[in-house]
Length: 177
Image: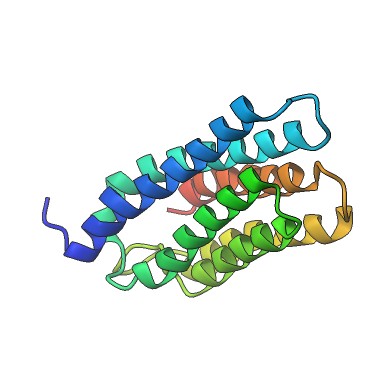
Protein backbone atom coordinates (compact mmCIF):
# COMPACT_ATOMS: atom_id res chain seq x y z
CA UNK A 1 0.00 0.00 0.00
CA UNK A 2 1.46 3.34 -1.04
CA UNK A 3 0.52 6.07 1.44
CA UNK A 4 1.89 9.50 2.03
CA UNK A 5 3.56 10.13 5.41
CA UNK A 6 0.69 12.30 6.71
CA UNK A 7 -1.84 9.56 6.00
CA UNK A 8 0.40 7.09 7.82
CA UNK A 9 0.81 9.49 10.75
CA UNK A 10 -2.95 9.95 11.26
CA UNK A 11 -4.16 6.41 10.53
CA UNK A 12 -1.40 4.54 12.34
CA UNK A 13 -0.43 6.88 15.17
CA UNK A 14 -2.69 9.85 15.93
CA UNK A 15 -6.09 8.13 15.75
CA UNK A 16 -4.98 5.03 17.71
CA UNK A 17 -3.45 7.38 20.30
CA UNK A 18 -6.72 9.32 20.52
CA UNK A 19 -8.59 6.03 20.96
CA UNK A 20 -6.14 5.14 23.72
CA UNK A 21 -7.00 8.39 25.49
CA UNK A 22 -10.67 7.53 25.24
CA UNK A 23 -10.07 4.05 26.67
CA UNK A 24 -7.89 5.46 29.46
CA UNK A 25 -10.61 7.96 30.36
CA UNK A 26 -13.29 5.28 30.36
CA UNK A 27 -11.38 2.93 32.62
CA UNK A 28 -10.22 5.72 34.91
CA UNK A 29 -13.83 6.73 35.51
CA UNK A 30 -15.01 3.11 35.80
CA UNK A 31 -12.32 2.11 38.28
CA UNK A 32 -11.77 5.34 40.16
CA UNK A 33 -15.25 6.69 40.75
CA UNK A 34 -18.36 5.46 42.48
CA UNK A 35 -20.59 4.44 39.58
CA UNK A 36 -23.64 5.32 41.68
CA UNK A 37 -22.56 8.95 42.07
CA UNK A 38 -24.55 11.49 40.04
CA UNK A 39 -23.31 11.91 36.50
CA UNK A 40 -20.85 9.00 36.47
CA UNK A 41 -23.07 6.66 34.43
CA UNK A 42 -23.71 9.42 31.89
CA UNK A 43 -19.98 10.16 31.59
CA UNK A 44 -19.19 6.46 31.14
CA UNK A 45 -21.92 6.23 28.50
CA UNK A 46 -20.66 9.15 26.45
CA UNK A 47 -17.07 7.87 26.52
CA UNK A 48 -18.26 4.38 25.55
CA UNK A 49 -20.22 5.83 22.60
CA UNK A 50 -17.17 7.79 21.49
CA UNK A 51 -15.10 4.60 21.63
CA UNK A 52 -17.63 2.80 19.42
CA UNK A 53 -17.49 5.62 16.86
CA UNK A 54 -13.68 5.65 16.85
CA UNK A 55 -13.47 1.89 16.34
CA UNK A 56 -16.02 1.77 13.54
CA UNK A 57 -14.65 4.83 11.75
CA UNK A 58 -11.04 3.67 12.06
CA UNK A 59 -11.93 0.29 10.52
CA UNK A 60 -13.98 1.98 7.77
CA UNK A 61 -11.21 4.45 7.02
CA UNK A 62 -8.51 1.74 6.98
CA UNK A 63 -10.14 0.37 3.81
CA UNK A 64 -10.30 3.72 2.04
CA UNK A 65 -7.50 5.80 3.56
CA UNK A 66 -5.42 5.80 0.36
CA UNK A 67 -8.30 7.38 -1.56
CA UNK A 68 -8.77 10.35 0.80
CA UNK A 69 -7.92 13.83 -0.35
CA UNK A 70 -4.31 14.70 0.47
CA UNK A 71 -5.45 17.57 2.72
CA UNK A 72 -7.83 15.48 4.88
CA UNK A 73 -5.45 15.95 7.80
CA UNK A 74 -6.38 19.66 8.02
CA UNK A 75 -9.75 18.49 9.36
CA UNK A 76 -8.38 15.39 11.11
CA UNK A 77 -5.92 17.39 13.23
CA UNK A 78 -8.49 19.50 15.11
CA UNK A 79 -10.95 16.59 15.21
CA UNK A 80 -8.46 14.22 16.81
CA UNK A 81 -7.36 16.93 19.26
CA UNK A 82 -10.97 17.65 20.19
CA UNK A 83 -11.60 13.93 20.80
CA UNK A 84 -8.63 13.77 23.19
CA UNK A 85 -9.62 16.99 24.97
CA UNK A 86 -13.19 15.79 25.34
CA UNK A 87 -12.10 12.38 26.69
CA UNK A 88 -9.77 13.90 29.28
CA UNK A 89 -12.31 16.56 30.25
CA UNK A 90 -14.94 13.83 30.68
CA UNK A 91 -12.58 11.86 32.88
CA UNK A 92 -11.90 14.98 34.98
CA UNK A 93 -15.59 15.97 34.97
CA UNK A 94 -14.86 19.49 33.79
CA UNK A 95 -17.78 21.94 33.81
CA UNK A 96 -17.18 22.80 30.13
CA UNK A 97 -17.84 19.27 28.81
CA UNK A 98 -20.81 20.45 26.78
CA UNK A 99 -18.70 23.12 25.07
CA UNK A 100 -16.01 20.55 24.31
CA UNK A 101 -18.52 18.20 22.70
CA UNK A 102 -20.03 21.11 20.77
CA UNK A 103 -16.57 21.93 19.39
CA UNK A 104 -16.12 18.31 18.34
CA UNK A 105 -19.46 18.38 16.51
CA UNK A 106 -18.70 21.72 14.84
CA UNK A 107 -15.36 20.46 13.56
CA UNK A 108 -17.27 17.52 12.10
CA UNK A 109 -19.76 19.88 10.47
CA UNK A 110 -17.05 21.98 8.82
CA UNK A 111 -14.97 18.95 7.81
CA UNK A 112 -17.93 17.33 6.09
CA UNK A 113 -19.10 20.54 4.44
CA UNK A 114 -15.70 21.07 2.80
CA UNK A 115 -15.43 17.40 1.85
CA UNK A 116 -12.30 16.70 3.89
CA UNK A 117 -13.10 13.00 4.38
CA UNK A 118 -14.40 12.10 0.96
CA UNK A 119 -12.33 10.30 -1.67
CA UNK A 120 -10.47 12.07 -4.44
CA UNK A 121 -11.97 12.08 -7.88
CA UNK A 122 -15.57 12.26 -8.97
CA UNK A 123 -18.01 11.57 -6.13
CA UNK A 124 -21.65 10.95 -7.00
CA UNK A 125 -24.09 13.18 -5.12
CA UNK A 126 -21.15 15.03 -3.52
CA UNK A 127 -23.17 17.99 -2.16
CA UNK A 128 -25.98 15.85 -0.77
CA UNK A 129 -23.54 13.53 1.01
CA UNK A 130 -21.69 16.49 2.50
CA UNK A 131 -24.91 18.08 3.76
CA UNK A 132 -26.25 14.85 5.24
CA UNK A 133 -23.04 14.08 7.15
CA UNK A 134 -22.61 17.69 8.29
CA UNK A 135 -26.27 17.73 9.32
CA UNK A 136 -25.78 14.63 11.48
CA UNK A 137 -23.11 16.50 13.45
CA UNK A 138 -25.21 19.66 13.62
CA UNK A 139 -28.01 17.67 15.26
CA UNK A 140 -25.65 17.03 18.17
CA UNK A 141 -25.26 20.78 18.72
CA UNK A 142 -29.02 21.24 18.58
CA UNK A 143 -29.59 18.44 21.11
CA UNK A 144 -27.05 19.99 23.49
CA UNK A 145 -28.87 23.34 23.27
CA UNK A 146 -32.34 21.85 23.69
CA UNK A 147 -31.59 19.56 26.61
CA UNK A 148 -29.77 22.16 28.68
CA UNK A 149 -28.01 20.96 31.80
CA UNK A 150 -28.99 17.32 32.34
CA UNK A 151 -26.17 14.84 32.99
CA UNK A 152 -27.54 12.73 30.16
CA UNK A 153 -27.48 15.46 27.51
CA UNK A 154 -23.96 14.53 26.37
CA UNK A 155 -24.64 10.84 25.70
CA UNK A 156 -28.02 11.69 24.16
CA UNK A 157 -26.40 14.24 21.84
CA UNK A 158 -23.58 11.87 20.86
CA UNK A 159 -25.98 8.94 20.42
CA UNK A 160 -28.15 11.12 18.16
CA UNK A 161 -25.16 12.02 16.00
CA UNK A 162 -23.94 8.43 15.84
CA UNK A 163 -27.32 7.01 14.86
CA UNK A 164 -27.65 9.61 12.10
CA UNK A 165 -24.01 9.12 11.03
CA UNK A 166 -24.42 5.32 10.83
CA UNK A 167 -27.68 5.67 8.90
CA UNK A 168 -26.10 8.20 6.55
CA UNK A 169 -22.88 6.21 6.03
CA UNK A 170 -24.27 2.71 5.79
CA UNK A 171 -27.82 3.17 4.49
CA UNK A 172 -28.35 6.45 2.62
CA UNK A 173 -24.92 7.03 1.10
CA UNK A 174 -24.46 3.38 0.12
CA UNK A 175 -27.69 3.67 -1.90
CA UNK A 176 -26.50 6.82 -3.69
CA UNK A 177 -23.51 5.15 -5.37
